Image (cartoon, rainbow, N blue to C red; front, side, top):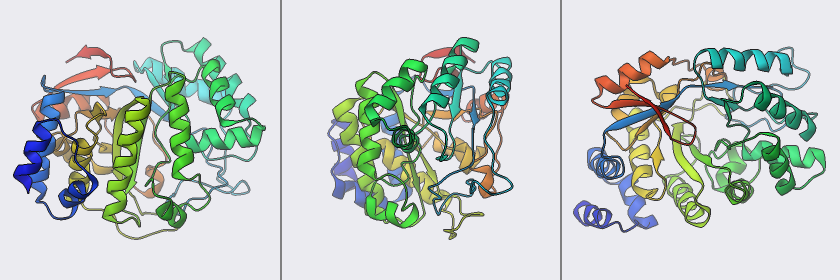
Length: 354
């Protein structure tokens, strides 16, 4: 079976769902890893590993959705609830620029009072003050929430935010793109088709996006496969995904609880994503949730990117996971794994080779 699938992949023929499910549930980890590494080497033969210097700014932790897997959100009346002022956000971005940063990933909870004008004004000021920083911010769930709160359509909301300075959209809030799973772990969040509709519209107006997957909560293997194929089909339609980032659910301090996926499970899902998503150019290793050593191994299981330096990260840290890597450490990590590190932009243009 593996030999026939390898031949199919080498011929550039896409796998079907049953074949992908076989790789996930029955094939040996190293066999799947070898297939993924072969795809990676063909797509990125220069043995380079990219990363971006960025910062995650969580503008608020107030959220009306209250997903069961999230340890970060707070109710509006909670003593730890906050909304950052523009001045506080500008200070954080100024520090990012001082570190040579080029990407601002700004996300928060679905706040009941922050309407579109708050974001438009913020993005305009950020573009004026920090023109070298790409605003790679918000998520489909935030876009839909802001639109409803502001009494405008999702399309108008995205258009206006784009005009104000939003340049690209992260793939957050995807979790598993199967509504039965979403109903169990995040019943108040948008369904998978709404998530896809936002991405489709972003691609339509020229905004690149990433795609993500959080696995290891309550989904079944067939749901992971379905998630990947729905992304592949959306990419074939609209073509705007620059990268895919899978990570494992972090159960600490969450209402959902449970166990964390093993490193073996992470590597197998990562490798499968490289094989299935043959039309998505980049696969990112999640050192934020897996740690530096696992990220190195991931570079031989299909990943070609180490994500961002994340000068600040609060959401995963709220679940008790606090892996930190600065730029020098990411460069050393890539080199010691046998790759040439490259600092990149949000859209994967090379800025500096080390």
